[in-house]
Length: 144
Image (cartoon, rainbow, N blue to C red; front, side, top):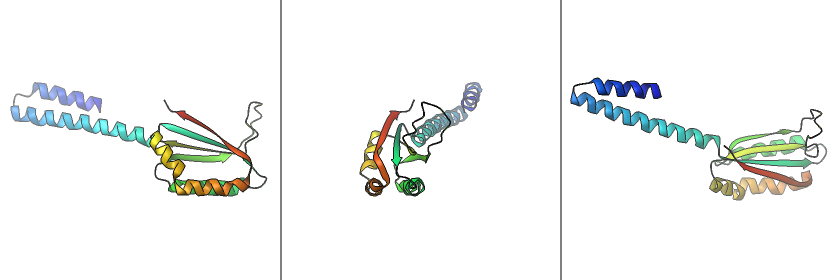
């Protein structure tokens, strides 16, 4: 896009017709506006806040809990929902006490708060209590 903008600018500078110069200036401003909008959309889609939840799941309940987590995709403010069971790679630092992890992101703290009070999320929180050996552990961070 920057190359296009530079070529447009050079063309604008070399044109002698004032109408063409106005048209090119208008086109250049539109390109800049589109670049800005694209950047905002890309930033919004990626999510700025990441929310991790670690679950200590009762024996034989990982698959059922995973299916329930998939239902969170219905929540519109939630971005990039991922989840999966622990994979033991023989790393002594591995968090083996957790059987399942869930990761998602949000565009803002406001969206995170909306997620926390969303009926789909609240229903899941209540339903999983009987599936866990201990309360979930969360970790939230701001993406760079």
